[in-house]
Amino acid sequence: MLNFRKNVIFVVNRMKSKVLFLDIDGVLNTERQHDRCVNLGADQVDNFGYAFDPEAVANLKRIVEHTGADIVISSSWKMWGLDAMQRMWARRELPGKVIGITPNTDSDEMLLSIDLDLMDIPAIKGSEIKEWLSTNGNQDTRYAILDDLPDMLPDQESHFVQTDPRIGITKEDADRIITILTGKAPKAKQASIRNPQGNERLANKKIIVLGDIHGRTIWKDIIAKEHPDQVIFLGDYVSTHENISEEDQVENLEDILKYKDEHPETILLRGNHDMQHLGYDWAGCSGYFPRVAMEMEKLKDEFLGKTQWIHIMGNTVFSHAGVSTEWLAANDLKLDDINALEPSELFGFNLSDPQDVYGTSPEQPPTWIRPLTLVGVMVSGYHQVVGHTEMKHCVNVMDSNGYPNNLWLCDALEYGFYLLIENGVFTERNING
Image (cartoon, rainbow, N blue to C red; front, side, top):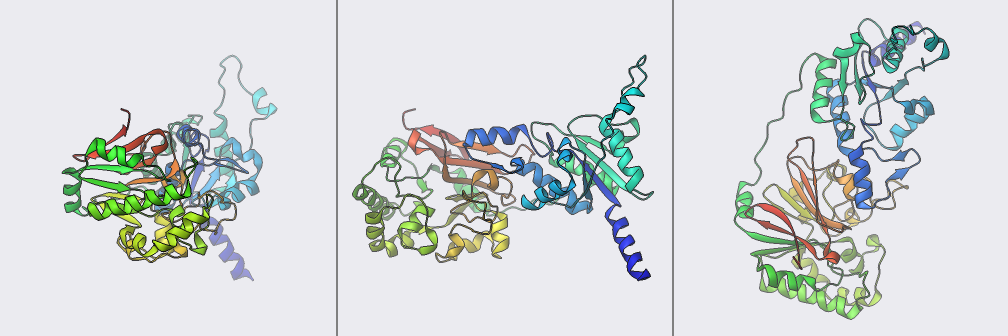
């Protein structure tokens, strides 16, 4: 029994050897993420409020993976209690382990102790952190503080990193915290050059990228206007939102397949609505048209023979919804494996999260994942170009942390917008512009 107790004490002390005091608003909960939710019109709210910024969360994960630090919540969110914070961490699959919350020292007694002549108001959060360390830490405890407000005591300055509330934790912030907690800077990963021939092809071509077709014939007008070297269709050729007849939807798809015959360099990608209308039980979604499904059954072999899941050109990946590192890892796949896969449940809506009714789980496949999630689980070193989520413009979601990953959202044909890639430069265009 004595040995068991010693082991428990050892584990507790080890948990507290590195501690990150973490604020939430302006650190994980950012102005940038709020703007994304508004711009994309996506419902990103759960029982705990708005979803956290995926890029800030990714940088928190970087800290945890490099340091093994435990987390103590110093945010006002702690008012919900430790149990609520731990449940939120589990529900949102956030990195690290929350082991505590700082105490509330903002008491009447403390305020009465202030020297009113000097107005020397103490740093509230800094005092709370100091109190937690005096009660729970030990002489070997290394600690760091992430907050968007400099409400710290003088002797905590060397442990403190202030975030920009607009974007939260950046890679640079994360690296500074790692240095504070470990005493050494993290090693930089060496960049690898992928498919340089593809980069040359991208630079020397005029390419147009067309978002979800959904029965529209606007693609013909865009091609006639641009005279491109190559066209990339991002999928969802059928299932209309605009009262296009079933016969016209099928005829339009047949015209696209014929265009592929006449221009073999054309890339046709597969969308979730296409899979649904090919008759796969696992591909059910909204917008089902029985006559379209009947006709697509006849076109099934031709459609599958002329279409693919993704297209890689240099360091850019084109797909219907986006390729998630979580989906790849869950299925033990690499990018180059995807196009060899036959249609299967791997490309159906992932039901692992019963509260995900929209496609916001990071394990969703390239036919389903939504951009607010995708931006946090992008494949390292690659740009991505996707459709699937309706936009009023082709939107470029740049990674403000300095990573070389951009995400283009291109499901905007309803408003006449498409993406032009010319000499390697990505530009939004409009059929009327």
